[in-house]
Image (cartoon, rainbow, N blue to C red; front, side):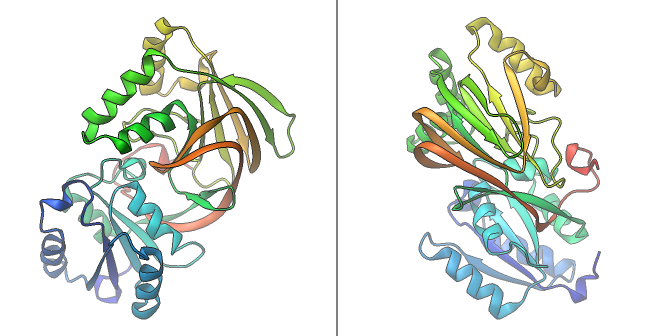
Length: 307
């Protein structure tokens, strides 16, 4: 850990993320940083040329830590500017979806999350690249959940209730698709699936464990295939998700890869870190080893702190 006097922290604030619309976010951060002698500067996203503005601000200020204040989409945006640099990525979770913050054990309480940034414990982790275009810092998926997120994105009802509403709509008639998965160095696999998850993290933002056997820094990622299941099996799956046993079920297959090509029939919705991408028939996924140095809460004990 570095001493506070040697640190320069840049906070990237998404002003329309979650509760940020109601709170004086910059004021709260400023008060905390003054109390703890942390030098801080700020940049707000506007939705226009944000990636370029973030990169320019980083180049001009040379911070040792850049903190994304928002949801998974904001974290993804900031991470894109920090890949393969020594600059640390921090997170203050304020979004509708805070999956990566949950993975890192970062509290949703504002001051507690700032305390994690102050402690400055970090670790180098892998990321994913989708179709050589989309960075995935948390997880990406095809099929059922991506459709839920697309409808959630179009809804006026936000938060957990909005997501749950779309989830139960989808649950009534989960459509399946055919897919062919080519993992580098492995036999081609064919599946019927309702959903494919591509991730090297462990949790959905809800706390459900989708990838209990993966490691966040082993140079590999997992493809979790959820096959069609009878309606009555959903209760068994819920229990397995929240006890970390989903990989043991007969309707689940987990493949570990460094690079994979996936073909779907028919085309399926894709989401990356909570952002709908559109319908695709083909997908290429590759791991970006040791891509970013990220701050996490070392005082708690999720899967992340295991080696």
